[in-house]
Length: 249
Image (tube, rainbow, N blue to C red):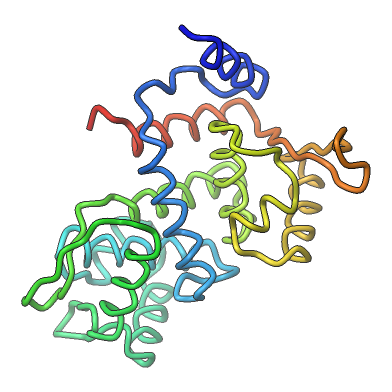
């Protein structure tokens, strides 16, 4: 083990994260988080409702990875959400030209496929063009990762909104890779959220005990952030990140 690896392990132990990151494909994890951020900031994935975000991410996973239509029954099974809530989302999608209804099933529209292909390109997620009704296909499990990570936060913090989930995911990632000091400015750059939005989320996470902040020793005008998730939440998040970024897939 070289010196840099020892230093990273020491930092990971200090943050409470597992040190078993040798099998992590951080490039893949970056793709997933970048896609989450792009979709979130384009508002196709709801900016506030975590429940809507889970549903939309699952719909995208069915369309663009599994190449299968979705139905209300499928989404009820996947999420446990009531049929009225799911139908409302699907009907809005049809009205906006994102989905096409065929009997009891819903398919992606050309408009949605075009948008998703653009997001895949921006996030460097590989995909292929097709001549069938789904139009594009990606083997990446990015949408499933987004849905599962949103659901995980909801398990431990039911009142969390989609914004908080995006911030928590990026904080986890930055802690694991130690790319840069965890400052509000870095977080704003990574998430694409405005500084005022980051400040609001930061205050909320701090108020519920999910975040700690200390003055930045290199800049007295700024401060550094660190996640203080409950141990069971942190452990579950680590397992989820490992499952979706393992090089052993």
